Amino acid sequence: MCYSRNMQVKIFGLRGCFFGIANMILVKRMRETLYSALLLQDISFFDNETVGDLTSRLGSDCQQVSRVIGNDLNLILRNAVQGTGALIYLLILSWPLGLCTLIICSTLAAVMLIYGMYQKKAAKLTQEFTASANQVAQEAFSLMRTVRIYGTENLELERYKLWLEKLASISLRQSAAYGFWNLSFNTLYHSTQVIAVLVGGTFILGGHITAEKLTKFILYSEWLIYSTWWVGDNLSSLMQSVGASEKVFQLMDLLPSDQFISKGLKLQRLVGQIEFVNVSFYYPSRAAIPVLQHVNLSVHPGQVVAIVGLSGSGKSTLVNLLLRLYEPTNGQILIDGFPLRELDIKWFRERIGYVGQEPKLFRMDISSNIRYGCTRDISQKDVEWAAKQAYAHDFISSLPNGYETVVDDDLLSGGQKQRIAIARAILRDPAILILDEATSALDAESEHNIKGVLRAIGSDFTTKRTVIVIAHRLSTIQAADRIVVMNGGQIIEMGNHRELLHQDGLYARLTRRQADAVA
Ligand SMILES: Nc1ncnc2c1ncn2[C@@H]1O[C@H](COP(=O)(O)OP(=O)(O)OP(=O)(O)O)[C@@H](O)[C@H]1O
Image 1 (cartoon, rainbow, N blue to C red):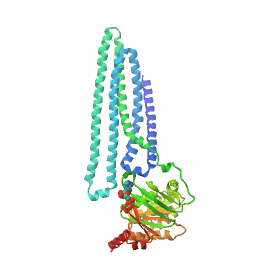
Image 2 (image 1 turned 45 degrees about the vertical axis):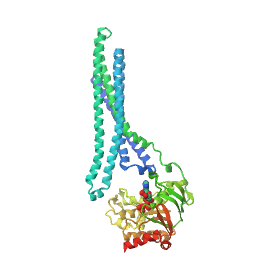
Image 3 (image 1 turned 180 degrees about the vertical axis):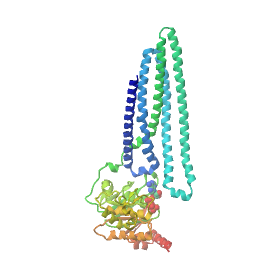
Image 4 (image 1 turned 120 degrees about the horizontal axis):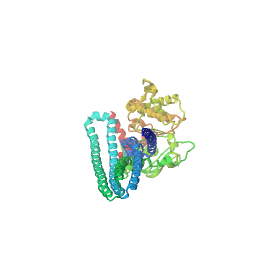
């Protein structure tokens, strides 16, 4: 007896261990698959999803699925086998009594199914509300300086509490449903006993069954109904996991962006000729508002072209299309005479240097930040050369650990981050360099330095590149070969600094306004 119990404990222990390992492998695989599916989505996908939601799916939602394997499936299987065994034995003992118990167990199973469905729905809502609460907290933590300066700690707390209250209300309803489920179980459990005693008693009197068999029957029917209860309980928690993981599976099933599936053209070399042919565009998330309308623009290799215009006129959008983060709604973009859509996008992007409006740094050392995404073989000397070109070397050298200093978004000034981003772009030795307001966060001296970089690029024939600069400070781009002026998603003026001043249009007005502001 003692030996068999020991064996049982060992078998259960082994089973638990194997389920634990399977569970760990499942969660790891799920996270990997989900993360890689998310990384390969179109940029427009990220316009519609929040960071809190996606990190929640990767974190707690994937973990939820582990319950399926770790506990639920394991226990459901065990109890289902035990219950079936008990039912067969009950039917052998007395089939009329066995059938009565089966009817009661079926009623219990029906209640259990409704309860399970409810748990599935509740779990889905719980996951959504948890993700929204995470999003609020994440936003507040990442904008902590704004929160502190504007003294909105209480407001943020209230925003967070709103989601917590929704979560509490769901949890309350889940508890009530659990109570109802338990009550149903108890009622049905006692019914089996009453039926067994009443019907069984009649059968004994009629001589159809012995008292010993009836006792066995009562014990086994108890076993059956408890097994049904366990199956139901675990099934409802399984349904919770399914409800919680539904979105995870939906996301995992998303196909990668077309850009990663199709193999495009790889030219022998990228020369840097860019042409926008009658390009119109609206963002998928705002389909009713045209952002670019009939844009025609051609940039010759080695040219420095500046794009200026009022805020919201579509300058960054133009660059987004050139980087193929979005596809034009109408018209097309040609690179060296080939449609951008037909080029191998990885090959193309490797040849582009891009400095965004608000460059973000990764939490790693400065050297790795500068090397980030560079596929060429590069030495530390190359990194320092790029940093010098971007006028970042001096401040990096003055940091306690120099290029090995670990930074993140909060540890450097806006201008310093921008200079690192410029160094990163230059290190790629790009055929096309895009600077989106690269000077906006820099002081006057640095702005002068950047002008130097632009001038050097323009005059150095060995490293000739096409440069597109989006600038608000018009003084930065006076030397550009061509200045494109945008307004309301259209190009309204084009020419060099002198020509545009002579035209006396928007550019001349903006230049005068900025000169007045400086004076
Ligand atoms: N991801 C997006 N989804 C929907 N609309 C967007 C998106 N990005 C920009 N827009 C809208 O497109 C329009 C043009 O924006 P864009 O960023 O191109 O302007 P911009 O000229 O670069 O402005 P700024 O000089 O202020 O950076 C704006 O009305 C903006 O609200």
